[in-house]
Image (cartoon, rainbow, N blue to C red; front, top):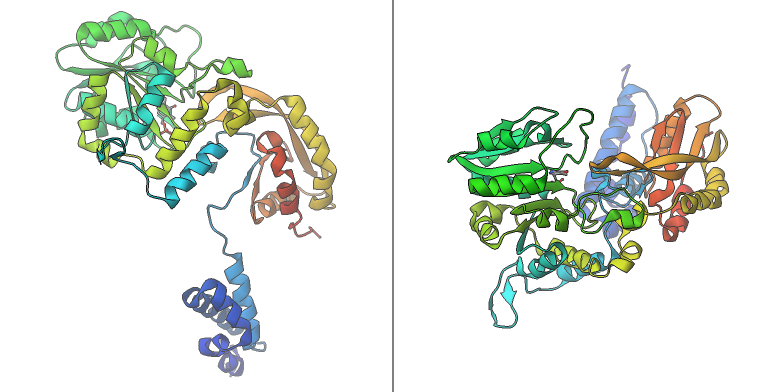
Amino acid sequence: MSGPDATSLRNLPAVAAVLATAEVASLLERHGRAATTEAIRQVIDDARDALRLSPMEAPSATDIAQRARGLLEARMPGLRPLFNLTGTVLHTNLGRAVLAEAAVEAAVEAMRHAVALEYDLASGVRGERDNHLRSLLCELTGAEDATVVNNNAAAVLLCLNTFALGREAVVSRGELIEIGGAFRMPDIMARAGAKMIEVGTTNRTHPADYRDALNERSGLVLKVHTSNYRIQGFTAEVGARELAAIADEAGVPLLNDLGSGSLVDLSRHGLAREPTVREAVAEGARLVTFSGDKLLGGPQAGFIVGDRDLIACINRNPLKRALRVDKIRLAAIEATLNLYRDPDRLAERLPTLRFLSRSHADIEAQARRLRAAVAERIGDGFLVDVGDCHSQIGSGALPLDTLASAALSIRPLGSQRTLEHLAAALRALPRPVVGRVGDGALQLDLRCLADADEDAFLATLAHLARTP
Ligand SMILES: *Cc1c(COP(=O)(O)O)cnc(C)c1O
């Protein structure tokens, strides 16, 4: 017959024959029977397709076992660690904050052992899972009470649902934010069952706009920190202090959604000022919400701090149960918050703050230290230079403030396509390296490369197959 080579197809080994080879014993030991058999079947299927396309000799059982090994070993976990050299410190797509060692250890202990999650060790009766964080959050923010949920989106949803279900929630048109990943204030309002009442205009909102909108149907006034954009020029907004008084007059709570929200004054660490949670509480908002994994530098979480009676209402909402946080994260949050009790050593211990406050000189020195070794591993065909760049904080925090940084800037000597290939090869490494392509260069911003990770970084690069 012509076309497919019938003899070769017939000579293709069966799965059982491959499983019987000596080569496979170690695969079974490492990957188990199901995964190994599946890989062998896939290799045989691929070989069959190849034989149908062009006549050649069928691979032997040992060949197939070897290819199956390659397949099994190439299957690396999707969430394996990578090097974030994008220059965006809190990169939402790369998991936002890198946790402090203390938080990592606490999470590991909580995973490994039983913990008093909802158990009061003093009395031996049932306790509350929020109790572990309540006093810490109150101490750090000056609030009366606190609760914690899955993320800040959940915190806002829960507050709206608790106080404005079937009622009206009043918000300025200038604060109807969209955060990446489909968090849009009008949609959240609708899902919370609140009727959104927009007041003012995009650029200007006045006290009277709020006063006119408040009535007996009002459930809540919402103030949103416009964390990822700024309105400039002919603008007016009602400050939180004044708005709190207006809401109080109308007998409804003011919720101030800070978004990132910082627990410390960041200008102390050379960064632009971002409102702190303590300030927002002191300004009179009855409820303040903020994220755990933005500037705070902890795991994903959403905090609600505020008046005791309001927090009690929130905790009685059945949605709270659906949005609660597990013991692993609670342990990590507690350990992270504990670091804030010693502000002098915070930058040393909290990776987010350590990365954000690194000086240009420090990063540039690291780039100079690594340049030759990186160039050697990247191989011929590229020029590797040390250049200036700008890092971003990320996650919508302080969007207009960039941080002077330094990068290894890699330019192809030949065509631009080789740059895309190099970027792809770096992403395919056992520990992927993710940079930023722009202006004809691949920039590796070293702001988030800890000194202790330099050896691991060079070792990873050594896996690069040389571009011919
Ligand atoms: C980021 C942000 C949110 C959402 O917080 P997540 O923790 O990402 O769920 C809500 N509101 C504002 C103002 C934010 O900046």
